Image 1: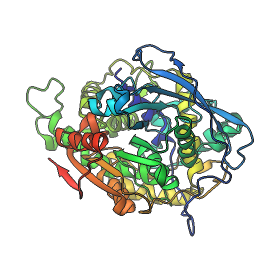
Image 2: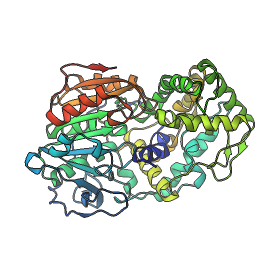
Image 3: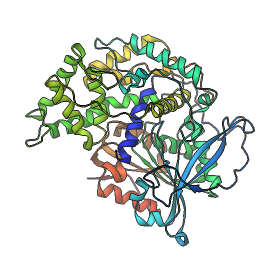
Image 4: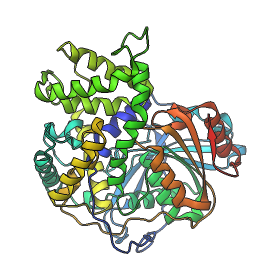
Length: 501
């Protein structure tokens, strides 16, 4: 599995899958950096990293941070960090932090992975820094002890029943929230985006950097934006890639709802590919036929699931097909997975069961996602609002069948937020560059435009005429890559928003 696909697997396991709907917060305020500043951390003790496939130059260390920033003298937790030093120390400018997606993603291996795709000038002038966010192993981990069946992506994401009912989703939310309350310990109450940003600033200080640059991807764009809001004068060059809607009154609910438009943006690209003559995975003769074929097949599998030994769940039903569709639209490289599954199901068969991460990993990732998303903002707790939203969504967006507006784990979360969500504003230095694909299933262009609007004069945005989640050095194009690389290497940023075709 490639690093990009491994990161995507982690995201699909928990990130949006543990978000839900929320209640608006009256008179939101911008959060402060901390209630009481903890003492400056000492220098990090770097040593060889454990694990296979890493660049031999990569070093690892452990940073202690307060579990509760409102009580900086209280219990502490560990944060695993990594680095590859500047390749030209005499030209070093500072450190470039690689902020992972998720919540539930790690960038611990990224200095050895995607960091090596960066242009030479960036690798010459910056230490590349990765980390495992709080709660995620090998940092001090959390675990909800969930039932194995509840770790299935098609269960974690709230796909309604075939008839649109959501009672089963509410039951799942209560069961999972109860497990997190029973098994997550005190740490799960202190997960959240603002605390991750505070951890990043502790890392910056431990690195001895007055300011830090960052490349945040997906959920990492929200982390990066929150960091830049809380610590604006400690930022150097900030790249936000594949951007989340920053609506502080909705947070994860807005991200999940974005899948409706994201699927509509990307599915036509899949349909065109899946109808090309000569494509061994072709599913229809015309692009116009692919969408109705998919909808008919999903409805048939709702009625007549196909046994699928070794999968979780052990059947191919309509919602498993829909979840596979959502996963496969993350990158054109993944289109064949959906086409192969459709072709098999049309014959009444299934392919080999997909390989899943170890259960220990899924438990940890799902718990981190739950803690972050559910602690960031309060969510609605009554069924009526979800029922209305799901019915409206199913009518307007049949491909996603109401899932993006349904009740998930946070609908039954037992803990109220400890602070108001951070409101992203235009106050701070103008040193942010957004890069965004036009067709992105997970973080659609519509949400990126809202982040661009919120940042105002602080940012410019590069819109790339490409398909896929992750733009820079992944699913983007040469024009967008060159623009971002120039900014990271030299600080030169376009004077205004630009489009790359």
